[in-house]
Image (cartoon, rainbow over all chains, first blue to last red):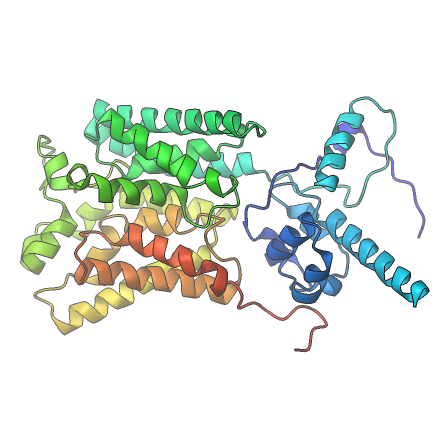
Length: 98
Length: 331
């Protein structure tokens, strides 16, 4: 579905660069049981392969609830999409070079 | 770091550009670290106010000094490490308040200042600030001071000049040295209503329980930890009590004295140093409870809550590996 949403400046949820405080809100709400508190630490550091291998990056069904409840206002969902995109680029590059 | 940098740029752009494209989700539930800290401080207020009314101006002095110096140390360390000033999130103030609640009302000023320095800098900032600390900062500060200046934390000595109309002997010390015959003077109601000596904000059991229940209902602390901690203490104390009733105090006594209640609701539940998955939270809480009673009944310290929680903070990272299987994973 294509749509354009326009929100007023005051309505946009602000994101911050605060670290994860391990409050566990995302763990409670995640429908896919992903250890987001650990996953997000790897994603912040750009360690996407570890995130995918050990911390269930690809189990994510992309509902964005983790970003919605994050106390630190981390862009968790943004991080996850970025990691998937970067990993996808690596895979495509490997396939082309093979 | 790139993403964090780009986010800051986006934040700045928001102020200038008419239209910008942003990433989903487009709404937030409104929670924040600031709100979390201030609500925790609010929940601690009944117990703190009771402590100030009981012990008078010295208690007020300790509480104010502790909160202000926790904030000052946080500000200075932010300046020194050239990071964003983070006193606005209220976490430093919360550390200061909880630290003061554990202290005896007569603590000298230098003890409070050193304690908050250790709590904020060694407990929290050398690990990278909020969210990175493997131990509860308040307990790190308190434990280091308690080992360094033992005499100031002996409540019988510290509060010797107070006469408040109830037995001024520290209940846990009496239980340790005299057995159950020494604690007959303390009824359950007295313990609940704060009619016993102890830390500024740690004696008013009822106030702490009300504050703690508020935190649980609002979702600021994880109830699993609190409940399993109390159950761990209750069951272990009951076993000791059954084996030798003349020597070991009853579970109710252990649940209402010392730092048990403040530990269950305010200290063990500190976010960064406690687990988030269901089974690990139960292990963590129960383990801390069991260790508390073991230290109280067998160990050499009068109260075990501080060291028990610090010890369980240690196993938190391994413990949190026990987690539910993620969607679509078979192994």
